Every structure is written in C-alpha cells, then in structure tokens.
Image (cartoon, rainbow, N blue to C red; front, side, top):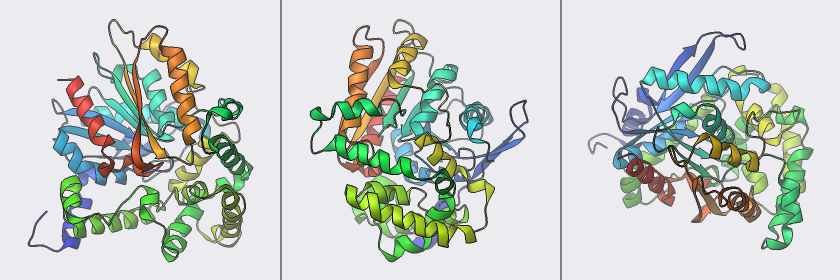
Amino acid sequence: MSTTTSAKDDAITFASQKCFHRSITIGPTSAHQKLRVSFATTSGFDDDGKNGPETILFCGGMGASRLLLYRFDALAKKEGVRVIFIDRPGVGGSTPVPLDQRVQVWLDAVPAVLEHLGVKTISLLSHSAGAIYAINTLLLLPHLLHPQHPFAAFLSMQFPPHPRPLLVTQKASFTDGDAEQLLGSILVVDKLPSALVGSLHHITSFVGGYIAPSIQFSSGMMGVTDDLPEDQCQDYYDMSSKSWSEVCRLQGKYARLEDMRYAFALLCFAFSYSLPLVSFSSIFLLGIIYRKVAILMPRDPYNSGISADANLCMQKDSKDWCTYTSLPTTISSLQQLYPQQSRPLTIRAYFAASDQIIGKGGQVYFEDCWKKGNDAQGQVDFAAEGVDDTDHDSITLVEKNCLGEIFREIKDLNV
C-alpha cells in the first residue's frame, strides 16, 4: 500500500474495489422468479477471466458474506490463484428465496456466475456450514470441477444431523468430555424456537453493532483479526497494520449496511464458553434481545439469509440439505461420480485445535466414515489434519497457514 496516503485512504481504496462488490441477475425459471446474485472475486481476475490462474469457489460458513475475500486477496495473488465468493440467497445483495429452494438456487447461481466471469472449472473450498453447498456442488455440478484433478477442501466441516446420536454413543472414545459438550450444545440450539431463529439477522445486527463492542468481544472469535503485528500484516495482507485495521473496520461498516455485522456472533458466543453458560446465559440473552429489540427493527428481506442459514443448519421445520443427507452416503456417491481411474477426486479436511461446535468427536466421526467408506476401494485421495492454535472460526485466517497450503496444492495439482 502507498506510504504517502493515510491508512484510512488506503483501506477505502482497497475495500471499495469493484471486484468485491459485483452482482448479476438470473432469469426466471419454473422454480423461481428473477433473482439478483451478489458476489466477490479476488483482484486477480482480468476482464473476462479466461485462461487465468486456477479458480477456487469458497463457500463460507453460516451467514458469511463475500466481504470475507478481503482477507484472501493478498494470499491469492501471492500463491497465483483466484477466489470467488457467492452470497447465498438473502445475504448481501442476493435475493432471498423460500428455505426449501435455498440450495437449489445456489446450484443455479454458481454456473451463472462462472459463465459471467468466463471461468470453465473450479476447485472447492468451504468452511463450516458452507459444506452443505460445497457437497451439493460436488455431487450435482461435477462438470464444473477440473476434468483431470477435481479438488475440494473442508475447514471445520458441518455434518448432517443424522450422525449425532452415533457421536453420543461413541463418547467413551472422546477426550475431555467432548461427547457430553457436543450433545449439550446441540440440545441447547435445538431448543431455540423457530421464530427466534427466524429473526437472527435482526438480533445479530443489534448485538454486533451495540452489545458486542461494549463487552469487548474478541474479533478473532468472528474469524477476523485487526490487531496483527506490522510484519505479519505486511506478510499476510500486503498492507500496514493501520491499513488492515481500517479495512476490518470498513468490513464492519459494509456489513452493518447489509445487516450482516457479526452474523455468527451469538452462536460463537454460545459455543465458545462452558455448557452452563450456554444453557442459561446465552439463551436468556437471546430471549431478551428478541423481545425488546428485534421487533422494533424493520424487516429487510435481503438480509434474511442469516436466519435461513441458521434454520438450515439446525434442520428445523423440515429443512432440506438436498443431496447431502449423510456422510457415508456422500462418500459412496463421490466414489461413483469421480472414478479413480479417469478422474481421481482429492479431498482435504482441516480441523481446528479447539472447536466447540463440532468438537473432537466430529473429527473422529468424519475420519472414521472416510476410513470405512474409502479404504475398501481407495477411490478418493483423502487426508485430514488438525491446525494448531485455531478455533472454529479462526481456522480461516490467513496467518493460520492452512489456506496457503490449500492454495498451493490446488495450483500444483493442475500444473
């Protein structure tokens, strides 16, 4: 960044780039009306996107928006790849849709955005609940993956609801009470009424804009760090620490304008502390905010995507994850769809050192499913590993290094 302009000016110049604030319109079909889809790309795209570096579609976690690409931009340029983030229905400027159409509209949006950018093939990267969308892309849009080296990486992957009783029965193999904590967290969230979850986009905006700053929530809890040392900011984000801090501040302002600020704040708060606090304090706080504040806020249909993602993740009110019905079934389908002899699929999974949402039990279950489902035939090149000094959200930070590892592997696969 320039040394002759202020940190704020540099941040505004960076954050306001056209590549971070793009949109297209998808025509009406028999299933849906005309839809607007907002998206972002890293700044490595040329005008038509053709014949460029390898392209990665990032499927963010629950309620995540395209503004997450602020943190990916410097790394993508350094590693010679490009990244796309598509706002899901009701997030950012993307038109909201009924919950049962949510995944299908995503599947319509992906090829439309890629065609607009002139991108022929992609690799997939997802975080947490983004796995719902990434898995469906793998299974239903296989032609968009690289013809010789299809690749998908999952960070702190979200699982379908069906395996959860199994996790509890296996609790003896877990450490530090993971099974009990996982079960308790699931039960707490499952007890939240749908009406409350349906207003999450109002509540999180209020908490993020007013309550969280007053009690000094750690921004790292939301997967954003704005206090890195100067040398790390230059290394990871290609700007001064003051400029990066201003970019993070601008991200918050942009997000609040879209009613997105700290969309995950309450759930991170609930899952980042001990179970007694989860069981009583967080639900009490949710109830007070909902009754006293949410009803006073205007309902903006363009931001209901946070609530929809929350409901989808919790499988309340007959939510549909489309083809991602269970992990064993998914593994079997991937083996059939991507034959080892002609189109071997590479799957990489990364787990946080401390993850209060999926816990060690989730990692054990995930790896066990792959061992049982894949080792017999070895159809998929699968590997999983833990990432030191990370939690469920901070695993996506550039300075934790797993993103760089993923970007390099994708580039090397397709040389």
